[in-house]
Each structure stands twice: as structure tokens, then as C-alpha cells.
Length: 182
Image (tube, rainbow, N blue to C red; front, side, top):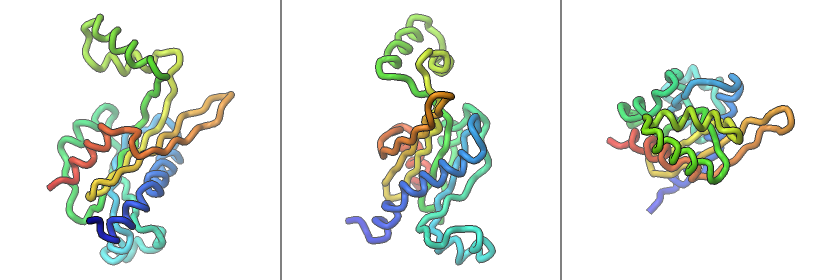
């Protein structure tokens, strides 16, 4: 059974994912991957009263930015970390390339035919004529809830587009959940 606290945290998670995306977005595009610890705001203010005037006390959760990661090291970093018990959840922000439907199968067959390493997929995706750059934020809680926000980068003719769905990045959500396991 889900407790009232877990429901409250789960309800706040999409807002926190948007907050992280907006925070990262203020630095512009082409930012390295970044992790965020998600902590209960009341516990953070109680433990660190000096931050009380820098956080939104009305928010249930506060994202705490960690140092940006070198490009290409998000998976390695996630495989090697475990968050302390005081962390209620975590989030990752990473720039990705989004392809239209059908393009992924085309790339997979090109990579298989070339017999090249998997990083070739990233290069080919970035070179695809219909690719779009995007910033993905995935956030999870210890209770398992997840949220995703994807900002598709606009161009001279189109504005940025924001997509929110809890299942946009299932592999990243699972990797983040694993960092919260004891």
C-alpha cells in the first residue's frame, strides 16, 4: 500500500522534473549530462537552515545539482553510485538525439552491416537528416515512481517543444532506480 507521503512525493515528481529541465535549460544547449539528488524540502531546510531562503519551501521536493559529468559517462557514473538514505530520489538531465519513427531500424541495420562498435549509432543518429536535438530529464523516487520531460530543440522556423510522459526513457529510469537500491 502506498503511504500518503509516497503519494505526495509521486505527485510532485513531474513538477520537479520540469524544474530540473528549466534549471539546465538556463545554461543553454550543449550542456554535459548532470545528476540531481531529490531531497524532501522540509528535511533539507531542517538540516541546513542556511538554504531556507534559496529553496521554494512550498515544494515537497528540492533538486540538488551535482557536478556535471563528462560527456559519454552517464552510464558509467550511474553504474557506480548509490545515493544515501536521505535522498528521496534522483534525476538525470542529458542531451539526446531524437529520430523519426523508422529511422532507428535503419541505423541498426547500417551498424550491423558495418560491424562497427555501438558508438557508431550515436554518430549516425546525429548525422541523420531528420534528427532533432533534445534535452531529456528523467526523475525517479525510491518508491519507484518516475517522470520524464523532453524538450525538443526548435530551429529558426519552429519553437522548442516540451513533451512530458512518465515512460519516455524506460532504460534511463531503470538505471536511476538502481542507484537508489541499498
